[in-house]
Every structure is written in C-alpha cells, then in structure tokens.
Image: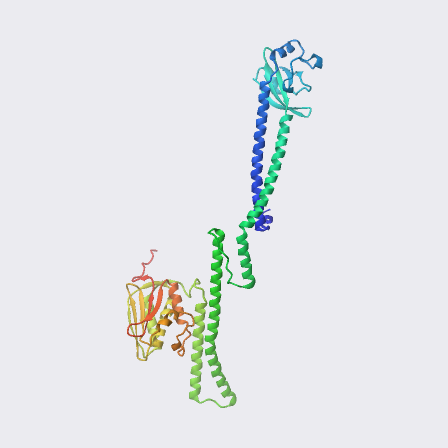
Amino acid sequence: MTSRLNSLPLRSRLALLVAVAVAVAVAACSLAAWLLVREQLTDSLDDALHANRVPDSRLIDLVRAGRCRAVPEEERLDTPNPFDSTVQLVDRDGDSCMAFGERPLPVSAADVAVARGERAEALHTVTAGGERYRVLTTPLGGTDAAVTVARPMAEVDQSLDTLALVLGLVAATGVLGAAGAGVLLARAGLRPVDRLTDAVEHVARTEDLAVRIPVEGDDEIARLSRSFNAMTAALATSRDLQQQLIADAGHELRTPLTSLRTNIDLLVRSEQAGRPLPPEDRRELLESVRAQIGELASLIGDLQELSRPDAAPAGGPVEITGLHETAERAVERARLRGSDITITRDLAPWYVRAEPAALERAVVNLLDNAVKFSPPGGTIDVRLDGSTGTLRVRDRGPGIPEDELPYVFDRFWRSPSARSLPGSGLGLSIVARTVRRSGGEIALRPAPGGGTEAVLRLPGAPAPPPDPVP
C-alpha cells in the first residue's frame, strides 16, 4: 500500500490524503451524530412508555377475573390502547397473556423477576414476528403478576435509517468536495515546486546555470528557491573558474612544452644528420631541457595543489607546529636559491595549527618571490612578531604597482613587468589558499623606502599547548 501510494505524483498524494482525512473526520462526526440521535430517540420512547401506562385497576380486575389469556376482540378491555402500545401480563411462573395488541411478546427472565418482586422494573428490547419492540415491565400492585408495555421500534429505526442516509450523502459530498479542494490546493501550493522542478530539469537538460527562480515570501519554498539560486550561482562560478584554470594551465604548459620540443628536435636532427653539436652548445641545450622539465614538474605540482577543493583535506594531518621553525627552514632553502642575496631573520616563537608541509611551502613561496624580485646583492628581511603571530617578508625590489595589488593572489596572474621571469603565477595563489585553510590572512603591500612587504597572520600562541594527560 505504501509503495503504491509513493508511486503516485505528489499532487495526487496530497489530494488523496486530504480526501482521506476529511472522510475520516466526516465519518467520525456522522457516527457520533447517529449514535447521539439513536440514544435520544430511545430515551424519548422510554419516557413515553413510562408516561403512558394502562390503569393498574383495570388490569388487576382482569387478573382477578381469571382472564389473563388471549381473548377475542369483543371481550378485550374498553380502555383505549395508549399510543398503540402492546400490553401483556406476566405471572411469576413466566406465563403471559395479552391485554392489548395483536402479537404476544416473548417473556424474558427480567420480566419474570419483576413479577416475583425481585426487580422494580425491566426495560429492554425484544423481537417478535420479525419486528423489534421496546419493552417496559413493571409490577402490578396487589397481584403476583407484572404488566409489560411495549411499543414498536419501527418509528425509531425509520428515523435512524433516514438520518443514516442523509449523513451518508453529506459525507460523500464532503469527501468529493474535499478531494476537489485538495487538488486545487495541491496545484496552488505546489506551483513553486513545479517551477523549481522545471528549472532543475532545464539545467540538467541544457547545463545552463544562468537559470534563476523568482523568490516570493519567506516560507520553505522561498528558502528552497534561494538555496537553488545560490547553488546554481556557485556552480556557475565553479565552472567558470574551472574553465579559466584549464585555459590558463594550457597556456602556461604550452611554453615549457614548446621549448622542450624545440630543444629535443634540435638534438634529434643533429644526431640524424651526423653533425653533433659542439660540446658547449650541447651542454647548454641539455641544461635548458632539464630546467624546462623542472619548471614543468613544478607547474604540474602547483596545479594539483590548486585543483583540490578548499574543503578537501590537505596533504598531511593538521597539527601544532612552530611557525618560527617553519620560517627558519624556509629561509635556509631560500638561501640556496639566491646565493648572492642576504636574508636577515628575527623569528620569535609562535605556534599554530596547520599542515606543516603546506605551511612550509607557503613560506618558501613568499621567500622565492622576494628572491626573484630582489636586485643582485639585495637584502630580504624576515620578521615574526611573537605577540601577534605576524610574519613579515620584505624585499627591496622594484615593488608592485598599486593597481596590480588586487590581482597578485589570482591564479596564473603575473605582473606585465615579471612575465619574462621564470614562474607560473601560482605561487601566491597557493600561499593564499594555505593561509585561508589555517584561518589566517595574507596581504602584499609596498614597503617604506621601496620594495614589497608580505604580511602573513596566523592564529596561534607564543607557547605550545600542554600535552594531554594520559
């Protein structure tokens, strides 16, 4: 049943559920009304039986005269039959005789108990000749008998049957009306859902992420529409960034691949022609090939790092690490790459929660950037403030123009003045990504007196947290 209901459209399910709910409510109300009316009608009939009784004196005379038997019409009492009641006499042995009426009634144990004086009265329903009677039995004073007064239940049953028919028609009309109203309400209530469904199907069919759903009100449907619009906008942005990443990666990969192909073709042609290159030229050519391979490997590694979503786990576990120790190692690595550059450092202790390898790579990228733009024999200052956790890397190069500062952390962005230098334009993007994952901030700004200063802030403390108690 449940699976069959779930297979119906949502609109049909809502209409069906509304109709069922109304049917149950109407049925319960109708049943309660029918039972209440039946009780009232039965009570009215009982009151009539109590109020309209044959005078006991005439019945006593009948018993004393020995006429408690079925008698012809002309010999019956002259007392009028009150409300067409059936009157019957019952003795203590359970025998009975008719006083009024056409049909004798069965004698019950309650009637005999009244005749014997064991009960004050008996009120019940019996069936005689296929017809139901409401029976009231009371003692007949001064005798060992009881008098039973009965009235047919036909008048009550007919009223109840008519009421049941009316209630049934009303219930059927109500259920049909509720079903129709349920369809209309479901259609009106699900109209925003239909719009959302159409939009989702359109996106699935055309991959058009520019679709937006009109938002009206603040209900659940409006919240769902806002969430869908936000989702499609995020997907559109993600797809644009992905396409831009692919285009920029293709452009950046083309340069080292073209250089590699040119150098290798030159080596192959020299070998095929039988005219080897001079040793010095061959050595320079191989050095160029090795440098291009290294640049290509570095670019691929940067692309792999940037291709991971922000929510994805980094390359290693997050742990408490000393930023001053990471900066110290990065300084030593940077000195190997710029042997004619002087790097001064002042690193106060500062402990942060980060992935050590990624954090070290970020600091190395900052130092590599400073080394690349420093003049020969220049100086780079590395300072770590132990009170705020601010790492500053300051070079004395040409600096970055003010209009280019908003773009320095974009993927593949390179200053026009630096496009002739080696690099892919991904280093600062990786720095920004790593710092953001660690909950910090990174900025580049012109340094007083010339050059550029990178300012990196990470939340932490000047001392590591205590080891947990085993």
